[in-house]
Amino acid sequence: MPNYLFQMIRDRIGPPDDRIFLQTPGGPDFSYGDAVAASARSAAALSALGVKPGDRVAAQVEKSAAAVMLYLGAVRAGAIFLPLNPAYTLAEIAYFLSDAEPAVVICDPDRRGELASLVAKAGAPLLETLGADGRGSFADLCATQSGDFSDAARGPDDLAAILYTSGTTGRSKGAMLTHANLASNAATLVEAWRFTPADVLLHALPIYHTHGLFVAINTILFSAGRILFLARFDADECLALMPQASAMMGVPTFYTRLLRRPDVLRRASAHMRLFISGSAPLLAETHREWVERTGHAILERYGMTETNMIASNPYDGERIAGTVGPPLPGVAVRIADPETGADLGRDKIGVIEVKGPNVFKGYWRNPEKTAAEFRADGFFITGDLGKIDANGYVHIIGRAKDLIITGGFNVYPKEVEAEIDAIAGVVESAVVGLPHEDFGEGIAAIVVRTPGSGLDEAGVRSALENRLAKFKLPKRVIFVEELPRNAMGKVQKNALRETYKGSFRSG
Ligand code: AMP
Image (cartoon, rainbow, N blue to C red):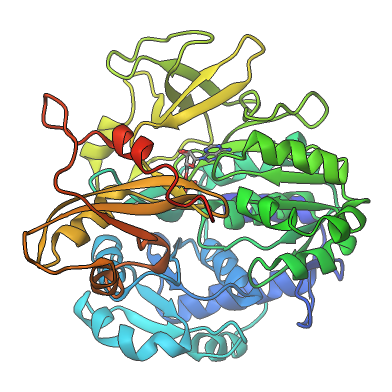
């Protein structure tokens, strides 16, 4: 049996020759030949460390070409790749390690000291390092390995990756993604978005998330195209490099920031083939302004960690602002009554449910949660509220689970509330996302304090600093006498959002 995903990549890229796969500004280029050899060395290094098929390989590393080779190496070794956001705190990492029990943890050399004791506590897996500059103990080990590796046999249903996604209870769940989930979605996106070997994708997304990792990298591998790989999003750098690219994938924040440089943008984007947006709602206003400034209609699509990509505005047909387009070929989408699960048909708002080869296998070691989020007929309950219009286009209305998306990052209010409630002098709190010019949503915490506690905004923020990743920290803390509640005792978050909606008006 071949390695299902990597064999498909091999078939699609053809002979691993000197066509460029990954280009980093100022760094060395990786040809397809280099990438196959470098990922072989990563796979061989993992095997030398004792990693066996089915073992988890956790990576909390900065974005780099070496990190991409680590992902491919893990797949080739038959392991399950587990990328972690470099912004995660030690407390957060401790949870992921205890839940996933990886065989090896690979971190940035600068983090080795603080992670060492934590990793030892999590059952003493191996700790290796890999820096964005290509240095580290794992890089050293790779350098001694052969560029030939016999890929571990893996079937379509075997796991290729676990991506942790936040849970409504505040605890992250590991979404188990199979070789077939990733392969089917990449093949679908190549067709839907017309990627060819002539494409050069401007890549400024993080690679610990499904968007930058699978949507971007797998789609390019499946089309034998090229990636122009930036360490992070910077509007000026993107504009400077855009003339070398043919397509860009971004979160809405990329687009709003690029729009602030209208003159450069028009020239830089003139020759581009495609701009794609996802991970959070793109304001219809941004869509319109982009058309005005560049002449291009941004193609908005919809997906999630558990399902890969679900729906996309068409390449050839009309790209309608405020919609995410029809379901992708091979993906079934229905709108259901959240309580009964009954199919509501067209133009009715309900919960979006999805079925297809793209949908994940379940939550890692969490059969109860898995069972709770699938219908008996195999449809996955996304938790997003939406409708399908008469033309078959999907509209996302809101998030049933009150998920906050700030700058493209997902934050579950519950997780932040739990940390705030633990602060001395706090009675209770409610965390909501409020409209924010730059981030889409900005996090605000509405807090009730114990009388005479003297707690202030700075006190709450500093207490949270080492507990939560920076993107989860509230940008505003508002103190109130009591939280608004309904007859059932539930906090009325809609009322809070309405009352405080102007809090980030000035940006
Ligand atoms: P993640 O699992 O981090 O990819 O987040 C998935 C969630 O992001 C979805 O369930 C949606 O709530 C949201 N999302 C993704 N794409 C869009 C979009 N184009 N418009 C609105 N929300 C989106």
